[in-house]
Image 1 (cartoon, chains in turn orange, purple):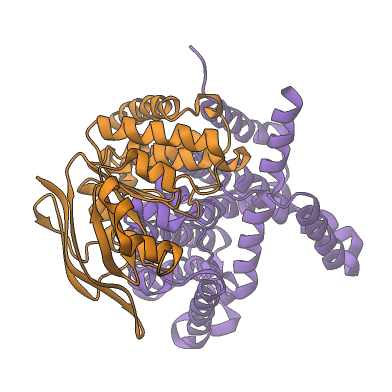
Image 2 (cartoon, chains in turn purple, yellow; image 1 turned 180 degrees about the vertical axis):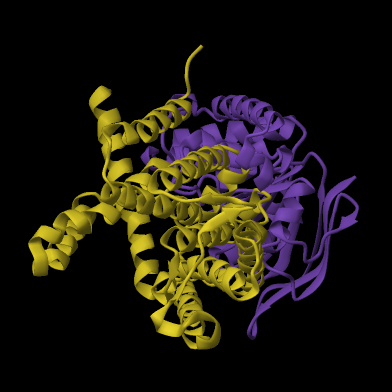
Length: 253
Length: 312
């Protein structure tokens, strides 16, 4: 079964086609990487898939349901979650609350119940807090359990975003440059984390510039250039593709 | 069993409120206390909107004014029972807030500030101009608060009623911010896009908290009218909106105790400073500026942070 199916997707900004007539399929349970030179349309694609942008044309199908133009919160309820290239952590909250926000769709977030702190909320919230603590341990952030988000270093915030995304119990996880700005050992830990997440049955869509990481973890790779598909296939196939080499290293490489 | 700091705070507040009459305060002290209580409840509502959710409102006194005049006009000109007028005012204000919330709250930062500022000013102008009903800038008198044959009168009784309302406001607001709904509010403040991705209906939640804070302001406006037995358009004016915002900021953004401290400080300070006579406003201004320079997060969050740092 395909987790995501993108058909003839386009996004225009004025006269620029950031994503241009793009079609591809992401198999459930796979780690599907999206790579390409700067400005290839990777982040635009992620924003389209997560509902932040509405496409100019095309159809997105998520687990056999057409979700084109759905809002991010609606997609979240259907099992899609993501992280951000430029970190979107709520610095006004503590670390664990940030993770708990990820589980928002699974608890009663009604105002009335909240104002009266009804028993079912107290119970569900306590359970969610434990889950969030477990997720923080899972991504290697146990030491920040009681920290404020604003006190955490960059690398830890990247992982906090992953924990928040996982708190939604997603079926599909979009990771937008999870290794950007990380050193070697941190990147290696992120790699292990991504592999763990995929092993747990979550379909991972990975946008990443670190080629070593991409080649190591990906089941399939989609190469974009100028918003179009340049190549697609297993890491071995993509690595050997002359067009890909040309796009990255210049023609006649 | 351990007592949550929240519960402890509520108990301490209740004790404090109950202890005040034991000091056998005079009428002036009671009057000040009642004004502090009214402002404090409004500021708690405003703090949910501004401090927690990060949505500025420079027109909140407008909602107080709507409550004030709903009670004043409906009881005086239409002989409605005060409680019914209060509820009608709250419902009307809530409806108005609901209608304008969606277009207004899609705005951000300065634009939202301007829109809410305009909203408050329009309400104040309307109250000023509807001379026939409101008496314009001269104001109008308001009957005492009665339920059936029982009349709420006397500083002590007003103080008791408003103390109970404050406790209820503190309790429910603390509940809210510690619930999933409250987490959604704070997530919107922290990162709107992150909140949306996490499944928060950002527009819907903003509308809800805006309406909630408007209704709270309206109810307190109604009660204030009956307490003072008088209503003037100043109630709804721009200056009061700014003072309410200042109470939130000085007391502490995203802090319920901060709301109380801010409301108390800014209600009482002008009284204390009246000994400076003409210099009152200058001293008042200096105090605010110094507070904001050294405690940009507000009094309560700054002090509680220092306290936790001292302990560890």
